[in-house]
Amino acid sequence: MIALRTLVVAVVLALAASGVADAQAPVYTPTPPTKGALYSDGQTDRYLLGGTWLYQADPTDIGLTDGWQNMTSAAGWSDVSVPNAYNAGVFTSQSMDGYVGWYRRDFTLPAGAFPKYVPKTDQHWIIDFQSVNYSATVWLNGRQIGSHQGAYLPFEFDLTGLHKGVNRLVVRVDNQRNGADFPPGPGGQWWNYGGLLEEVYLRAVARADISQVEVRPLLPCPTCAATIDEQALIRNDTGAPQAVHLHGYYGGVPLSFGSTTIGPHGTWTATATATIRHPSLWAPGHPTLYRATLNLTDAKGRSLGGYLYYSGIRSIKVTSGGRLELNGRLLNLRGFNLHEQTLATGAALSVPQMRSLIDYVRALGGDVIRAHYPLTPALEEMADQDGILLWSEIPVYQVKNGYLSQPGWRARALALLKENILANENHPSVMTWSIGNELPTPATGAEAAYIAAASAEARQLDPTRPVALAVSDWPGVNCQSAYAPLDLIGFNDYFGWFDAGDGATADRTELSPFLDSFRACYPTKALMVTEFGFDGNRVGPVEEYGTYAFQQDAVAYHLGVYATKPWLSGAIYFALQNYVAYPGYNGGDPLSNPPFNEKGVIDFQGNPKPAAATISSIYHSTVQIAP
Image 1 (cartoon, rainbow, N blue to C red):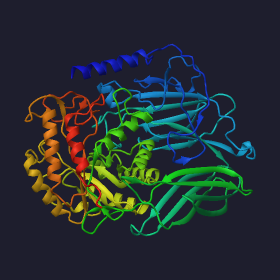
Image 2: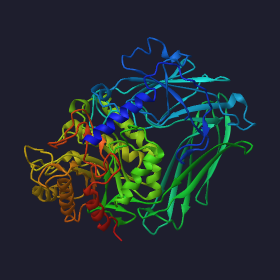
Image 3: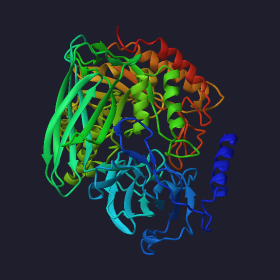
């Protein structure tokens, strides 16, 4: 623990030494964005707005009054790179509760972004923010162009007001949250890192934009031909009618969407269907991906824009007997919950840092990942490539009943669910849409109404995946009729660690009979253990909470119980790696190390704890996908 505290102090000092508090004006040279993106799926005319950004903290919220959105001088700003978490390494109550930070990026437009046959009047730019926590207000050259609330999912604005030479982009970020937000605040169960947590892109739009693409592989049976249903939204970005044609390929099979004339600032919903007669199916251990492309052309057949994605053909459903099935094969998955964060960079991860998470999961034998929020696109693309399934969940997390009962809150939650599905449905790795975590137990009437509405919304948007919810439960809780609309129920198991239900979960030997009663309540639902985990931060006796020996023994015991339940569709350990929770966190450990949650089987330095070997042995010996 002394070494860990030393590391934290070193991180904070390093941040200070890097000039975060330096009030002198840095030398700042505007540069253009660079062609390309950190992940493949998406429009082909994306430009990464990386390079050097400027940052200035605003803990007393004076920036608007003082006109920081209009500042031309770099005095008072510090150099940073984006993605960036502005409170990384600072573990104070103010850091957790949140405050305002400002970002600025002066840039020039890249040369050659548009074909010569597209006149300047038909050339437009869009800015795409992959994730900002939590509220963002954006100015371009002193003019506000948009605002957005909510983290973990992308949003975009038209870049109106661009001019020749240097353009100045300013973003005010406020990571303070209230009880109606996603996840609720102030505070929370994992550190509230504020900032531009993922990349920022510019997108060149020549006349019309391929703004959204939905790819839906339909597989009637494991040996059947697959039907590929595609839908693309094409937006006319000009004030004049535009004649366009859309065509593409799925693997080597052509797709023809046809031609149309889109009215000024109108949108065309283009659809096409293809048949793959002998598909190679995507699955863990066999993650076949089909390269698929779209090309938008004008009336003369000249290219206006493209879209690239890598798609997998597979089916996932719940059987009549209440089992999760992939391509007709029953699942008994094992995997990990994780948080996208490190001590040094907070929730702003680099591609190598994301890669390390995937590598840990794969090395330990995991075939499924869950987080309390949608994962970054680059990490999801890695899961596609590596054959790892994803439990995709929106951060409707431990929401109070007073909010669940509000129509306005429910509308916002459903909108968040829709955003997640539209943003991530093309990933074959996504196996389920989870509508939340640990809502009130027993379920209230307001919760039942939310579950029904969210389940219906998810099925309407994507009928090819089951709808899920992760729940707290314990002996003595009646069967919940509120769960009837769900396909998949996740149980968060802390028997022998946390005390729920007035001691009902204190004795770990009560886990097995409880799971049997849980199954009896929901015999037609697919059931998974979505969390089980135990802190481990020191050498000590197996009987002592928080020791490596206790953690290792508890892991083996719980996995042993799950192995006796042939109806179980999987179990997901919480968590893959240690992470920063919140000030004062103890997590049931009598010798805790706040604010750190040390349930991880990987420590902060990337070293495996003894429990990792136990998990690896059991996971690798478990048949997670039936023959």
